[in-house]
Image (cartoon, rainbow, N blue to C red; front, side, top):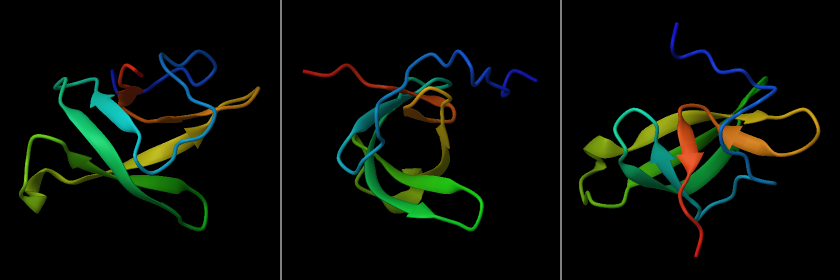
Length: 83
């Protein structure tokens, strides 16, 4: 059950997930860029593209969750270091 995250104390949050942000996979360490966001009936999702891959095979869809007290995070990812 390592996939479950304590949403009350996530590792990395941001005020709002938006297109163009870079997020790092917690499993592989690979860096992805958010290409688009969309909302389903009950959830929000981010489409992520690996920055070191030109093929569509490394594109991922990840759930975006809202955190109590404000902010959002992407499940299984932490925000890459900001410049």
